[in-house]
Length: 308
Image 1 (tube, rainbow, N blue to C red):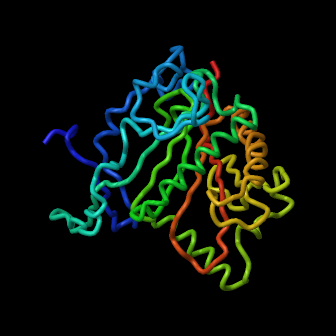
Image 2: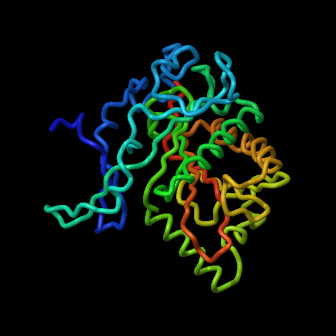
Image 3: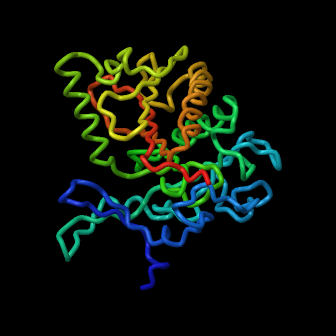
């Protein structure tokens, strides 16, 4: 069977305790970067994500404003080259397929993989948007997370943005992606278990306790940004609600507005530094007897953008 006809699947790596997605469709995705060493390469004026090219994209899920036609600001669409398939029957997840080769477990690749087009204009990046428009992007995240978590089979949602080819982006038009999985990645479970253990020992939230004055970058009415004490990546930034909140999609509208303006400041810091950028936001249905704190992590890689 040709790879173009194969459906995605999730395989359990029992050595490293992780799930790995195998998706033939991802190999067919286009790229408008000539090479990974030239991340500013964006000679074309338009692409399928641009205004007027909506017919070249996968089906639309929603847009902002909702009743807009040619004057949309944000579009959330299905990924034309998805890592997971929403067309697979989720009931197949109840019958994992043992591998005759290694004895490992494989699940059908059910899930959702969406794209958030952050601007109708090709040359406009997230760092170019004003705080209000950045707010619209995060509102789109929030709405889509709520929709995805309404599916009983979905246990985990991750929003991520790759800026630059070396950070994993294949299209230079500013966009982010949302993936919804039928399993909770072990790395997420480990993080929650560690937070629960810390809470059991101290009766305190480990993230709330990470707000040392020496680590603070900036503060707004409802949010604070810090450099984590044990940062995993250069230029890593955490954005944390001052009021304890368990889920991003449950933050009220007043905090949303503040988050948007505050987040605009933080993304400008990252982009103006001309670095490869990954932004990650994680949501899980996993229940823990702990006051879990929502966390937005901005991770920047060592490799600098080519400015020539």
